[in-house]
Each structure stands twice: as structure tokens, then as C-alpha cells.
Length: 419
Image (tube, rainbow, N blue to C red):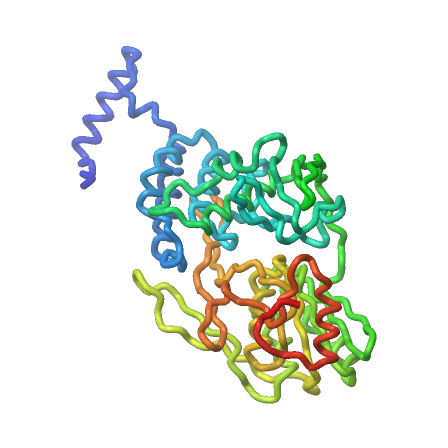
């Protein structure tokens, strides 16, 4: 237990310091830089807060006490705010959770996983590409599903993955290994990367993936497709204006034979934006999700989230929602909710599997900001959102839009199955 100093001991220490300074000898503790205390307090705040509130310790093999033993001395030894921030980023990677990360990560640090490629570790140590983000530079230069990443910037992918692998696991977890491989193939922030790729036919090629400047696009696009089917593309759920734009599109498509809502490139947003959109498809209140929160060492009982009907009319024709691995967060909750209220089938691939609402955390002394998974989300049958599967599974880079159009024409609804 720490003993608090008395007034007498402080005076004695002060006189001793003055005397030591007079003869040119300064006690070692007086040399300790003041930022050590700052970093210690912020590290403790981070470790304590996540220990009390992070919601997935039941699903992870992370030893949170080992995290403190391993990283706290490194945090105290950090020589700058930037170095401390890199340690915080390493701590968060111990949870191998794409939804738990720094809001202002180190500028030259590793990118988060699932930047433009989704990979699975292969037995030979390579990383098998199972999805490519359609709008990315990786897609532009021809990386395809079925390619295997052998190396990044001249280093074997297995070696890079080992370097970002969580160090404080109580036992091995394939999910942690997969997370590390996905961090490894993403490269470093704001930097191009060179990839060594092996094609499905066995040929090996070297390519350079540049840093691509995002092209500004509207949050919502809409157009008519063949066979009297409307298409609404929603790129985020961040802005209240999205609701108005979807309302306008629904007015245009009021009398169509069916509707496709595309959230394949949607990184998520706020339930306050997604929920009123769902309300346009029902005539009475309906549950669309269930949620939980930490209560001590366990999750408390679930509560139900409900959608209220909204709008001058209800769109009542068949609806398909398109998804890929790049549908994240609320762009996973929206398809799940539309299915939960009985108003849509999901067509595409499994999503990013970030299955919880997040809370923000600002470390008081350094000002570093982060977010962490706090409230796990479940569908109306109490199945975890992170295990959500589409109704129609489109594998191998197939044409998801074409499959959805065909399914709408045929009235196809059912469990997940290959297209």
C-alpha cells in the first residue's frame, strides 16, 4: 500500500534536495521526467475503463491482467506523447477487435485491418484473399479473390503478422491470428505498399498499391434498374440528411415492383439515422434488435430496440439489402434490422463482423481518443450480430446485384445458401 507523505517528510525531503543540489548531487527520483506520471495515469485509466466496460472478454482469450504487466512498464518508459500513443494502439490490438481502436492513431503506424483486402491465413503462411473492397486501389490494380499475399514490402506476410499478433493471450485463438494477418496485409498508414501475390494458377507477381485519394460521392444515390426495380445506394448512416434523401428516393420508387438497398460500401454510422429509414417499411411498431451491456463480470439481461412506422406511405414491395465484408457497424445493423422486421432479405457476403455499439474514451492527460466495443447487438432471435449471415450467400466475387435482381423477380427468400 502506498504511504502518503507527511508535512514533516516533505520538508525533510525539500531540505535534503536543496543540500544535494548545492553540492551537485541530485537524487535519482528527482530526474524522473514529469510525463512519466502522465503516461502512468492515462495507462491506468485505459486499462481500468476497458477492464470494467469492454463487452467481449467472454469471446476473447485476452488475459487483461497480463496486458497490464506487459505494457505498463513500456508506457512509463515512453519518451513522447507519440510513443505513448503507439503503445496504446498496441494495447487495443490485444483485443483483436476492428471496432476497438484509436480515433487519432499514430500517423505512420499500422493501418487497421480490413483496409482494402480481407484475407484468411493459409497453411503455407500466406494470406488468401477472400474479398477486395470495390472502390479501393487494390481493386483498381487487379487484386482478385483467390490471390494469395506472400509478402508486403519485401517481408513475408507470416513475419509481419507475427509482429502484430496479440502477446497476452491465455491460449491461442484462430480469430486473433486472422486479425493479425489482416492488419499485416493492410500496410502502414498513408503509405503505398508493394505486395508479392500468387495467383490461383500458381504464377507470382509483384505489384505496388498506391495511396488512393477517395473520390467524393453523395451519401445516397438512386436509379431505376431493369424489370421495374429501384436501387438506393446508402454510403453511410452518419448524416441526418441521409433520411431525407432516402425519403425522396422512396417517393420516386413508390410504385416499383421491388427495391434493392445497397450498403456494400457503407462504414456505418448512427442508429438514429438508420432507424427512421427502417420505419418506412412497416405499418406498426416492431422490434429490430436486442442489446446488452456489461454489469460487473457479466453481461446484463438484454433489452429490445424497436422501430416506429414513419412517413406519408409505407413501401410494401419486396426488398433486398446488399452486403459485403465492407458493410460495417450500423451497415450491419441495418440489414439485420430490415430482416428482423420482416421486410428484407440479405444478399451478398458476411459483413465486417463488428457486432457492438461503441463508446468513446478520451484519456484525460494526453488527450488521446479511442473507441471500444461496449454494447453487443443481437437480432430479434437473440443471435449475435457478429455471426450474421446473408439469406443468399454470393461467394467467390460473384455479381451480388445481379443475384439480388434475380431473387426479387423470383420472390426468393430463405436461409443462407450459395448463389
